[in-house]
Image 1 (spheres, rainbow, N blue to C red):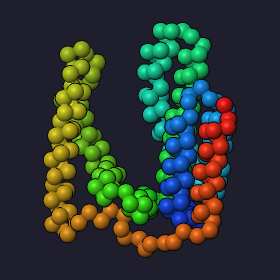
Image 2: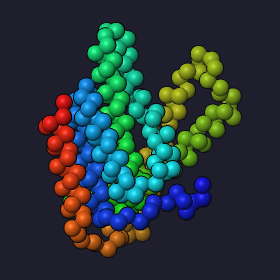
Image 3: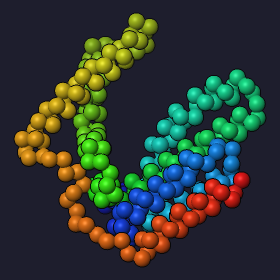
Image 4: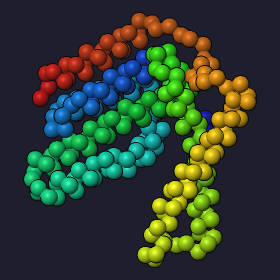
Amino acid sequence: MSPAASEPIPASFDSRTIVLTQFILLLGVVFTPPGQFISLFAFALLIAGAAFVFRTQIPAFLAKSKRALPVAMLIVLPVLLLRGLVANDSAVWLTTAGLLLKVLLALSCVIVLLVVLPFHEILFALRRLRVPTLFLDILAMAFRYIDVINAERVQLVRSLAARGHTGAWIWQSRMPGKLAGSLFLRTIERGERIHMAMLARGYEGAAGGLLQPSRLVVRDFIVLDTAGLVALLILWILP
């Protein structure tokens, strides 16, 4: 896939509309009990409809979904091990399946948002929705310098391998903990240097403030009202 093919298609809706719509769907999924499969499938159709309206690129969505599957399993697996294997009850297994479906739907809302909008437009929409600036700064820095943290991790792993660490022996089991601690300290030091460099260049915490403001039009209100009303109907009417 070429780099141009993986870029988000320019959205035909205001960025605030897309962010609020996905947030409404996310709240609907969160407030749905795990055992209500009809409601969860209804939300799945609603999320698919929103993805279609916002012109979500299917290849990009599937690529990001592969990365999200381990996150879903990490959330559900402890519940399955603590409840399902101990109780050995079909109701517990159904609840666990419903929880897995909820996690997948919640991640789908986030993935659609990330595929449709570039990250700087998401920050711009959150800023216009009066989200606290401190939260936006933390979010922007975490996204911007995640590659820096990964580079530090690669250097530490490479240095361990150069010293003969394989992880195959019991006495080497303490090394991952030491690696995590060293990565934490090096991340703090790198973050302080980056922050000082940004302040020296006149940074004043203007995350997401470089785009020109836009106005909501009729189609934006139609999408927001439809998403909100359908989500409320699913929560109140469907079992």
